[in-house]
Structure formats: C-alpha cells, structure tokens
Image (cartoon, rainbow, N blue to C red; front, side, top):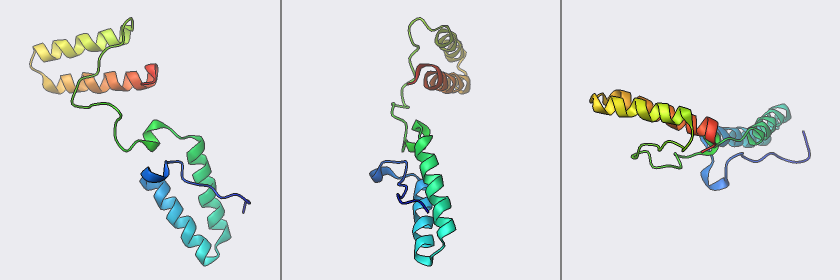
Length: 114
C-alpha cells in the first residue's frame, strides 16, 4: 500500500457513482484488513483522477438542453449539421432534428471542446 491515499476524481460535493462505490469499497476493505483490495481501490481512484473527463465528473450537462446547439462560425461540419437540422425541421421530422442536435453537441464536445 502506498503512503498516500487516493481521493475521488470528482469534486467532494458531487461524487459520481463509480467513485462513491470505490470509496465505500476501499473503506470496507480497510476495516477488514484486506490490504490488497485497498491498493486496488486506490489505484482505480488515482486512474480515474488522471483520466478525469467532463463525462466522468458531470452531474448533468453544462448547457441548456432545451435549446438547440448553435453552429460555430466558420466550421464546415457545424454548417452541414445545421443545414441537416433545418431540412429535418422543414420536413416536420422531429426525430431527425433531435438526431442532428445530438450530432452537433457531440461534434462541439469533440472538435471544439465545448
């Protein structure tokens, strides 16, 4: 076991289910004297902190999901997705409108970091 203990990758006030379960498992293993299991839990908590992403720490989206995402000026992919969404809206195909919104949000997250 290392000298320092791993803490949750999430902010303390918003611990996700995974970190919460690892913290509880680590505590139970410590109380039972299962040192190997404590080490595994601490390693997994450290790894979670190292690969910490918005998906891991987010309690909910940081944007208003009731509003469609806006295309980023000068981005060809955003322009194409906005056109796709507009065409679907004009055809009253609201499932396709939702699909275009999901694709644009994913594109924003992956390519624009928002």
